[in-house]
Image 1 (cartoon, rainbow, N blue to C red):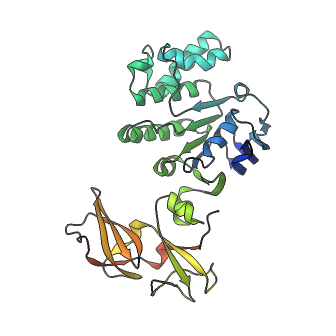
Image 2 (cartoon, rainbow, N blue to C red):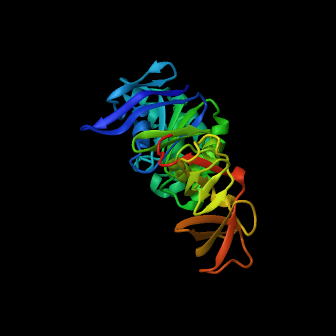
Image 3 (spheres, one colour):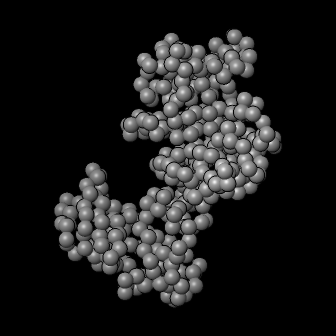
Length: 348
């Protein structure tokens, strides 16, 4: 069962927090809603859950218009940031809660609880209380509770943000495995973390300022962003102001060869180059600059190089002899590794 937003707008006291959202999540697809705080992504998810009523527009689950249905009649599983487990209930009773609310037969409840706990790797913890579990284990229980009702749609609202980096990485792998085991479940995943979105999602809907900016596969958004916001929010990018010429662009008095077929000659534009595609030394499209900061990141060094008042980032395989602060260096990038964006475009 898929999800469809049909021009969904949500406003509080005249303040629009979600503006005319048109978006379709296909059956069995993982769609990430990615954006900063206040972008409208959680509001969109809550509109699907039934906790927020649209000011205008309709929400569909499959062919069913659920806009006017209360949450308990939508058949949706939901996992929130703070787990929301009942502290006085054992794990098995937490997982059974939704099934009991649906008046499921006791024998079926036992079977589904055991199934959901095994699926999330929590079968051995059924008799424990939430306080006896780690944060990652509590999150697994919350996911098991959502899965126990066998939803066609699973909503995940920042489910990993309360976990530390190592637990988050492990849970990402677990969520990916769960999706492989439940290929028919449509998942709407809200996050502000680009790594989570790039790792899990079939497609990513980038949100900002209450509006959908761009939607596409992780590769599409990374390789061909349509706006400065998408370029900077999905993966990080160097965004340099340029003037478009006949066969390339001009930046800081330097002529650079890039594809200009979609931008009018003479126009101002923004050149987008991902940091890992910027090299050190001689090569095509050279830029001279001064090293302002060097960050060692284990397998890589990140250089921040000032070029005509603009900071250019370069992510390089760990250097045996990195340049020093204040050194003059030469950077380069391939013509095919740059994307030209219309200047000042913030909407996809």
